[in-house]
Image (cartoon, rainbow over all chains, first blue to last red; front, side, top):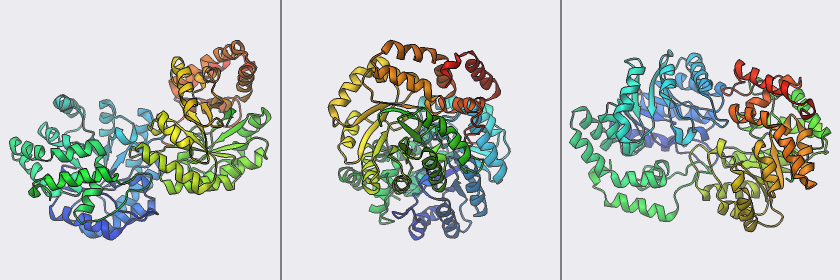
Length: 297
Length: 297
């Protein structure tokens, strides 16, 4: 849960059956690029829309393809605590290095409820957990106090924070760092936000775009690690047309288009989520056609 | 989908198995009070936390208990469109008069996606649908334009609107009324908001409290229908201590306490949702003890 974590889509058919071959085709370039982990069945991987057996099948297919070369961080979120425990047990049995647990909710949850949920999943599964703070999908927002309480639990090892205001980053990171154990990893999602987050001390980039364009993201992480902020920012700026599409149409819907245009796989997200309408697809195509091909890898 | 719709909790055990006897005990007073419909498996009924077989069992138990005396409005929401279709088909086969369909989401949905979701569920199930606009749980907000598009679909018969600002009600109702067919029913949830909503022309009150205290709610609806706004407002004001608890602790968690204290059933909501902590339980007890017993029925 440090470095670049690449989040691929999970191709599935209209009945929610995972397309194993297409998933493995998506994973191959991520392994080749030696991303630091693969975020399987993340939000981009549509985990809440897939049944437990299908999620298990996706894990098996990924474990087969990856063959231990890259650790798997597997989404284990569910509305019910007992279901999340079972999913975490499945992920552990399937060889996941860690689980990514979001505070999936329908009835809005209290902080104490979320705390007990994480405690139960970590304790019952024995799978190391990354806290998945994704208010856009779960509508639960983790306070720094709650992250600190969770970080003190055995088995809670990291947090994936949402993007936010770059100006607020340094203070946020310093505040959190002071609250959590030294080996607890602080990382961020929100691709257009990631370079500044890493430069501010973020230890992981949980990336949607790295699920389809891993190499340019590895180059960015390498630049940050080498202390070359100028190069990291230059690459990030070159990707800005893509970030614009992500912000406008959602990164999930845009990466389905990129995957198809790059010939990796043509898939539909699970209904009711849909592919972009034709006009938006043309916008994506135009952006990709206009970008330096060296970035698109 | 006019008048008082009473939304009971769905008692279930720790494994998510519906406790049929307890559910039927909850339904009996609703039938005796002759509520105009029963909102089975609504948000208060924890529908998203229950499996399809358990939801089917709840419908069967309710249909047996109610025996045609009160129409059943059954929650059929699900993350996946195909699952919502199956749930609506189950509800229709189980004797539901209508389905209550929320825009349940994880990936935030577009208006077009929600439109197609409703169209598919209405078309494939043949079950009349009430649009369930519940932004607190789904985080999707229906625009007046989308409600108008949906109201024009065959089989989409009503909308359950969320509570809001009483001052904005008259304008909101007039605007919506002008957009939808004359026989499309406009109703509201948000118990502390319902009297003003009905006085502003709302045709239905989708009520949490009526799932445990149906008679006082029927009295309110009768007063509104008789043109006696003073009496409706007097009863509503007398319930204000309860509304305060609903706003502070959520109506769902509070009605679990009321159900236990009234000896109807002692149940736990599905984890991670929990009963109120002890201090809050004592507050609920104090409010109930301090209220005119004539209201608590």
